[in-house]
Amino acid sequence: MKSYFSSNRVTAQGKGWQVRILLSQWKKKAGCDTKVKDFIELNITK
Image (cartoon, rainbow, N blue to C red; front, side, top):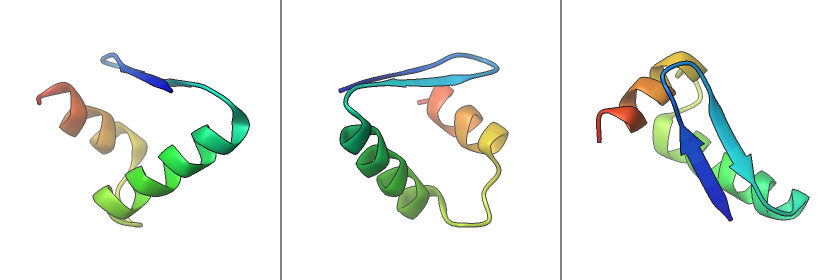
């Protein structure tokens, strides 16, 4: 499972079930009200 963050996109590679699990983990981490662009900015600055 791989994920890449750039300034304007996020890419997740893997099997469908792996991507679904990853997205649900990201949703729990960031919160339901977080926009995708804000989530990308948080992960780029790490």
